[in-house]
Length: 413
Image 1 (cartoon, rainbow, N blue to C red):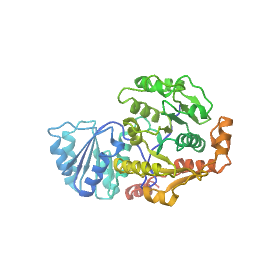
Image 2: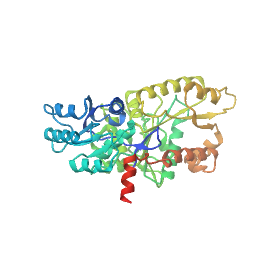
Image 3: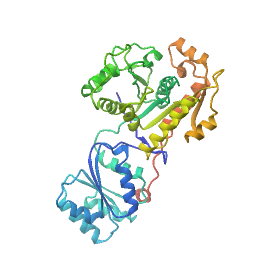
Image 4: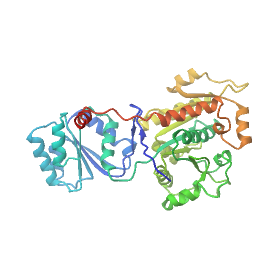
């Protein structure tokens, strides 16, 4: 399976920031601004696989620290010096560092000649504030991924506020639309092991699927993955839930994270269709996802659950934007519902889509054994899903260039 360049969403700028591979990292700060950015970064989910520490004192503190401590894979050090004091400090740091340790210097002078001199001195990267947490993580990523494996693909977790809100149907249609819009390999993973419907909706009857992968996470490689998946379209493959009730759904600790991490490494886009109950592995999947799509219906129980989930995710993922809220099954005949405006104001998130209930549309898709976006591509539902998919994969922008990058581009020209 081909792997594309896919990075994680930066909700602040519209750019993308990738997960950092497992590594060791120490940050030595001078200014409070860099301390706050470093603290936010080492707590961020994108650095969750790394061992990170934060120290005051800047360059001098780093030199003193490594006289008695082993150096990590990467040292991030801040220094406001620009004269011989800076280079004397870097020379002193080099004397106590392992030769393979890389150094990212945070300086306060936007000078191209200083930049070139620092690179010649052996500094891996030089960045200048102001920095936000995404600038910081991206700079680290650019360093540690040089010559390494490609960045992991982008994952979208779809979860319902409760059972019966149509989150699985939405996830299947979104996965199909993402593959069609991006023209990139996309994997749909049906994680409702007991009652998953993805295979039915795509008219597939796989003998094996996600249950086999979870039972043997250490054996999951590209060859086994290809055998477990079924092709649903030119760009969409399905890792299905079992077609019959599994005897045992208990998997060893870490199986879900290991399998989902390997899936992200195998395709540019991965959609997780999550069941509507709460468990540690579901929380972990939501925590590691780059995008979360929350499907809800306009009723009281869904409102309560949506509010609770959004607040939990906001607390646990402070550097990420809120989930994309989908209000589904609106205007069901004979049912009282909470107005969209009141629902949105209560949960604190405006819906990305509002989708009316259309029994005829669903029946047509079922009779054709296809998802709605394929069976009825001209329907308002399909147009809405395609628009959301285009928004997810089609708004990738490069982060704003720093002043130093602009100077370097001018000099190259």
